[in-house]
Image 1 (tube, rainbow, N blue to C red):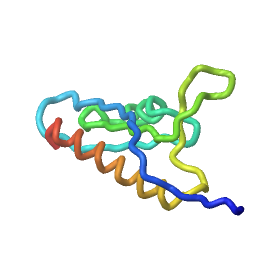
Image 2 (image 1 turned 120 degrees about the horizontal axis):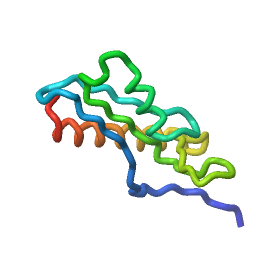
Image 3 (image 1 turned 120 degrees about the vertical axis):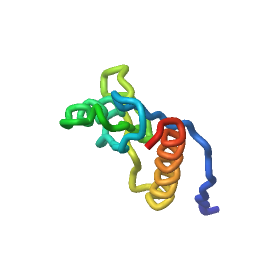
Amino acid sequence: MSMIERTIPATTHGRYLVVPPASPGPAPVLVGFHGYAEGAEAQLDRMRAIPGAARWLLISIQGLNRFYQRRSTEVIAGWMTRQHRDLAIHDNIAYVASVVDLVCREWPT
C-alpha cells in the first residue's frame, strides 16, 4: 500500500522580544527578523545599534522552528524549510501579525 501524506494545522507558542521606547508616548515601530540559525537576541542587538533606535518601539520576532546550535545548549531558530513552504509562509505571516497587533495594543504607536 502506498503512503498518503497529509497536513493538519497545529498551534505552537512563538517568542518575541520587546524594547519599549525610552520616552513615554506614541512611538514608531521597528520589527526585526533574525537570519537562519540565530535567535531573537541577535536581531535585537542589531536593531539597538541603529542610531536613534531608543526612540522606537523595537520588536524582535523569533522563528517558530527552534533547534539547538551544534554542540551547544543555545537555542536558535529558523523560519521554514522547503517542506510545505507555502503553509509555513502562511503560518509565519499570521504569527507576525499577531505579535505586532498584541504589542501595538500594549504600547502606543
